[in-house]
Image (cartoon, rainbow, N blue to C red; front, side, top):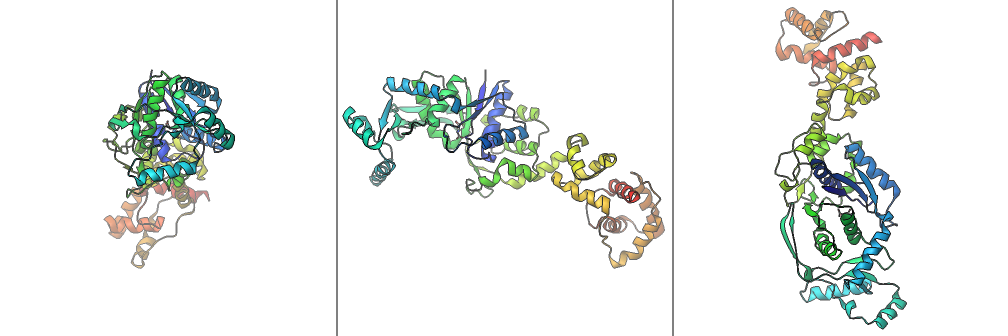
Length: 441
Ligand code: GLU
């Protein structure tokens, strides 16, 4: 059975980059009728915060990316310790004592000699007595996984055939000196024990994948299918890493972005399929194929979310936005006609308030000098209320007959006088709302 996971570290709010990972894994699981796990990668007790765990859940729920179960790495430390023991017994795990400064120096020397900066495995030559002495002096060492120096190959769902020479990669540290288990092994143990079949993540993980494949094999597990999506850049191709802080999902929500707009964009951006607004999750799932994504960096422009949001809102019935309409101050008996008028004219739900204020209070009329007389004549012809959908038509017909004006010369001055704007809602829909309000008070 297909099983995927989204595995954020709860060290911050999730942003559009993380969303891509979450969404792809979610859609793969749902399309296959499989399981989607939310895995909290909280092995770092200092940086992991409970408030971020809650925030991640809220953000996923807002988007409708519901998970089937939650796993927490901090609950599974004994499983990782067991795996580490196994690697130790197999002779694939060794303790190393270099300080960060020493490692840095080694790297610099290698680079100077034109060699790749790969850990030289000096620790493998330490005798037990030397290790004891180092431990006494420096405390526990880090534990590194001894890679087999062969090519590591896999068929990546996005990048295609990958082949990495293990000798070009440093033996990864899996356990830190203070005993903290690192993600590289924790993730492998989890993926294996939880039956994860498909792993989609960012292309910054490609080297991790190479080492993890060897760790999975050493522990006797089954390798999942891997796919590495490209990283997002800004609209000009600039690195997004620094701006991701302002592209947190909660910021987008604050700005009025609608979940379906965001999901529709992210499920297609960087793929060979066009971005299309989807009406619901079922449609998104149906149209999703991870293999259609490309390896090139993907340009993301937050502005693209607003036309999609506007389009999505236009398609919604009142029942989907009733709370927002009420919050804008619209009385219940006007909610239906108000929404019918307003939804064509908003970008986000935050714009409702302005339209309601226009209906309630009217606008500062915009009347050109040459239209003054015309407007006065037109106002005199305004029928008695209550107004309905026909009123605009009947009224403008009467005004046309009385004044001889037609077309733009007829409609535009009326629109500007009533709304203070040159464009906006259909007047036939707006007029009854204006009238009712005036009648009320
Ligand atoms: N916690 C890891 C991260 O956020 C998970 C990576 C993965 O999907 O394996 O980068």
